[in-house]
Image (cartoon, rainbow, N blue to C red; front, side, top):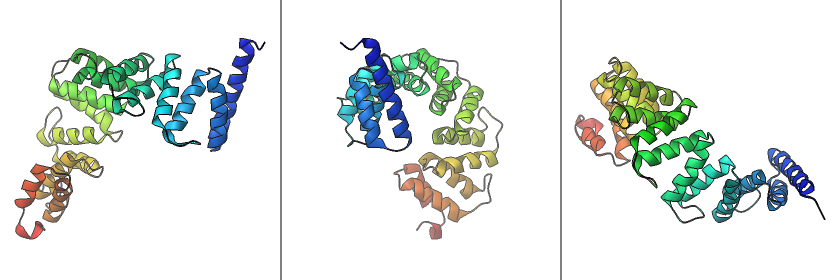
Length: 274
């Protein structure tokens, strides 16, 4: 009879081998080792096997199989698997879409310190998705993720300060968190920071800074930022007046169905509307 200790050592050895093979991009061989360890109950291997099924590494993509292995690992307490399973339930990938289940798994992962999960459960509380709406809880979880440097959580926390959800409304504090997220490339935060600089809300008015942040977000395809940048070029706010550039950015936003951009485009001199 094989001892539990022996089986555990065998599973850990297979996991180590799988990780080494995966690192060498020998995905099919890695999957074979992960499977061997996973079937022996190794939670980390179960998570790794789920990742392979989700990302089509060494096996055909199969979200149902990914979710099955994530669940096994999640039930053994693997934080990454709990977060991944939450994503599956949130998006209905391999499982029936279920906001309550998504929130449950996000919270488990969040309690283990997974910053992305802290953002997600914060979002759930902020919007009443799978849990009762609770702005204070939303802020609490956004803050935990934000303090770990998670850009989405920083943006979410900024929005809470902007709207006075779970905290006293504070535009300066909103701007502070938007800046942290914006500096990491978060397009929504870049857009909002641009608006703040344009209006002088929470920061000193600075049209040049407004245009700079709008441009960063606009280049990422953010329609509101494209409109903002168009306004800057049309009026010569923070940039040299340039109707052609204004038209360029209005058109980009209009192509995404932005009604404000469509109206702004019609108000430009006729030769720039084409």
